[in-house]
Structure formats: C-alpha cells, structure tokens
Length: 217
Length: 252
Ligand SMILES: Nc1ncnc2c1ncn2[C@@H]1O[C@H](COP(=O)(O)OP(=O)(O)OP(=O)(O)O)[C@@H](O)[C@H]1O
Ligand SMILES: [Mg+2]
Image (cartoon, rainbow over all chains, first blue to last red; front, top):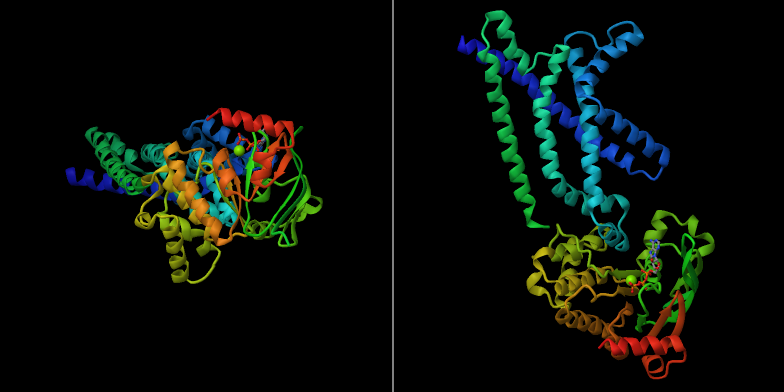
C-alpha cells in the first residue's frame, strides 16, 4: 500500500512542480513588462495596467481559475480548453496572469527604491537607457526584491493546490483520491511532507542567493 | 577661443523661474568656482550643462560648436543628447558610485560600454586614474568599503575616464565630514595642473579664493558677480555679493 501511495503522490507532485516551474518561467518576465507598464509616462497605458493589476490582486485566484476555465465556454458555446492538457493550459494561464501581477508590484517597488542618482550617474557617463537598466539598476533591484520575491514564490508552491478545483491531478488530489478509493486519509496528510521539503529547499536556495549578493549594499 | 560659452540660459520649473538668463564663458584650463546661497540655482545650472535638465532657452557652445539651443532642443535625438553630454562630466554631491562594482570596474564601466579602446587600454588607463586620486590600494574594493572621501575620489576618477572637456562638481565635499573634505579638494586642486577645465559649485570659500581662476556669484537665478577671485572677494561690486561674503565669513 505504502508504495502505491508513494507512487501516486510522486505523480501528483510532478504535476505540482510543472505548475510551479512553468508559472515562474512565464510570470517572472511578464511581471517585469507589467511593472514597466505601470510606471509608464503614457497615462492611458498606466491606467489600464493599474486597473488590471487591481482586478487580479483584488479577486481570489480560485475564482480566476474557474472564470478562465469555464468562462470561454459560456461565450463561445464549446470547451475552448479541450480535455486533459487543456485543463493544465488553463491553470498556467490563470497562474501566470495572477503571479505576474503580484511580481510586477514587487519589481516596481524595487525599481522605484533605487535612487535617481544611480541612473543620472549612468546618463552623465553617456550610457543608453538599456545599458543603465541592465548594467546598473537590475542587479541592485534583484538584491532588494529577493526577500519579498521568496515570500511570493513560497506562496506559489502551496497555491498550486488550487489547480485541483478544475480537476488537474496535482499533489492534493493525488492524496485525496485515496479517501474515496481506499477509505484511507493518511495519504492526504502525507502530501504535507512534499510541500515542506520543497519549501525547505527553496528557503535554503534563497538564503544562498541573498548571501551571494551580500558583497555590496 | 573659449572652451565654454553659455548665453542667456533660462529654466523654469512650473511657474518658478530658477535660472533667469545666465551667461558666461570659460577658457581652456580654467577653474571656475560658483558660489551662492541655497536655492539660487547652482545645481540646476550644472544639470542643464549635463543635459539632466533642458534649459527653456539660451545656448551652450563648446569649442565654438553650439551643442544646445533652446530653440530646437526638442528635436535632439537620444543619441545626440548622449553625444553632447560627453563634453561634460559631473561629480555629484552624493557620489552615486555603482555599489555592485569594484572601484576599478566603476571607473572602467562607461569607457567599456562606449568602446573607448581595448579592454587592456581601458584597464590601464583606469588604473592610472585611480593612482592619480590616491586609491591604488583600494582598486579591488567595493564602494561600501570606502570612506566618503574615498568614494568621492573614485567618482572623480570615473568622470575623468571619459576625458570630458569640462568637468563639473556639485558641492563635492558637502556630504563629507570636515576632516575628509581636504583630501577631495586636494585631488581637485591637483587636476588644475593638467589643463582640465573645471566648474566647481562650492561653499568652501577658501577653495574658491585660492584655487579658482574665476569666481561666479549666483543669486536668485542671475549672475550677480563674475570675475577673478581678487575682484569678487577683494572688491565686490554688488551689495548682494558683499552681504553674502560677510555672512559666509561670519560662519567661520
Ligand atoms: N526638479 C525640480 N522641480 C521643481 N523645482 C525645482 C527642481 N529642481 C530645483 N528646483 C527649485 O529650483 C530652485 C534652485 O534649486 P537648485 O537645486 O538649483 O539650488 P542650489 O543653488 O543648488 O541650492 P543648494 O545650495 O541648496 O544646493 C530651488 O528653489 C528648488 O526648489
Ligand atoms: Mg545644489
């Protein structure tokens, strides 16, 4: 029994890891683009981006998942997302939109916290805007946003369990399935070990990066 | 021919006019000290020269070439602005070193990005500049490991690395403890003999008196007095200059 449970939980955990990894892959760069949008001097763009960020941060991720998965069907009359893989795609769309909005606010805070003197020093030295951003500002921003980012990323680990709401077979569902199937609840409890271990690894990783960047202040 | 000619520069922020028609010229190798009370527009003037602000009207010419004209300032492209900026260097009151780079890298970064030679050439020139500001032993250190005076000397070396025609300093010592101002002023004084043209905004009257070739007293956005240190300090023409000088003498 134990090995059957372990195998099932591992399968669920792989899906959890996929949601986690692909969400980061999409949301980390998209968040930066949204951050630039929310700092734009073109006011209509700025207003649009701020409104989107407000809506996404102001409603539950669970609701966003449901709307994104079932919403298009109501409008177009058929299931746009399709079956098995479609559910996963819908989950990723919802997660990437949601997390990029949170990340964008972290990026914005980080970028705005770098003193104007840094970019002026670059300007006076004849650098281009992109040289100033990539060679001067970016690493300072990264250093500053590591603590809030690690917080958000650790939240993401556990938020992946929300995918269960549109029947994606992730870790929680893998554990829960034994209640109906075999009448046992301990496999569900055991999922905690996976979350704990993974968050533990991430905490160590972030601590390491923070230490690496400690050489300047 | 003067290296720098500034004619009738005006600049307003909203409704407040900060520079009300500034004109002066400077010869190659001269050191100009700009003095004046707080809020008189000294920083704004330096920022206009370095294109961090754009004057509303007036012209700026370097070596006889007009690089800024308020008439068509809007038409300048980003790359023209960058090109024009390189005639000037600016040393900030608050240093603004790049914290993630060592002293050597701070000095090398801009010449490297601007492709001012091979990596070896750029490095050996940067090391020579670091020697000149007396920080040979510190070239591998990071800014956070340096005192304020040392940081400001790095900032001077960084600005010199691009060989600007005119190097501007905005109160280079006013963020420093009194015992550290001397080392920075000494470095600036040392540059005088290398025919760099310099504009120094300063509250250090002794420096203005003894080091500079010209002194400009600014009050409320106009040039109230301009001349040699002997003229401005010894025989000020305007009442405003007299009372400013008296006040700053009392302070000591
Ligand atoms: N970006 C800005 N927006 C609005 N007003 C500004 C701006 N920059 C400067 N000013 C105003 O312009 C005036 C001149 O400022 P400036 O910094 O040039 O003075 P300063 O002579 O350098 O003074 P200090 O000796 O205190 O450095 C001040 O009244 C200041 O409030
Ligand atoms: Mg000032």
